[in-house]
Structures are given as C-alpha cells and as structure tokens.
Amino acid sequence: LNTNIYLSKEIVKNFSEMINNVVKEGVNQLLINSG
Image (cartoon, rainbow, N blue to C red; front, side, top):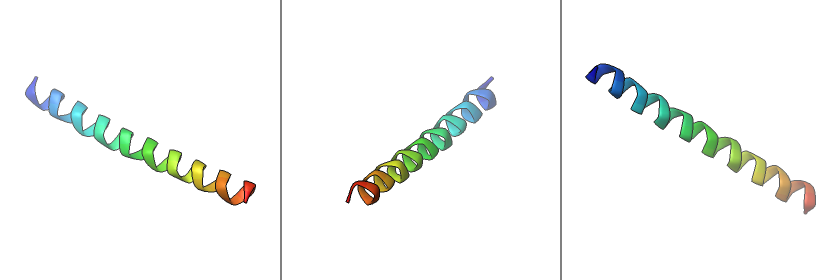
C-alpha cells in the first residue's frame, strides 16, 4: 500500500511539472504571437 501511495505522489508530481511546462510554453507562444 505504501509503495502505491509513493508511486501516486511521484506520478502527481511529474504530471504537475509537465502541466506547468505546458502552461509556460503556451504563455510564451501567446506573448511571441501577440508581440
């Protein structure tokens, strides 16, 4: 059970980091396109 919880936390952390990168890329693209 503990390993499952640990894996879930790792997956969530990686997923949130991926989302943050996607959002940053999107914002950068918007700035480049609008500017």
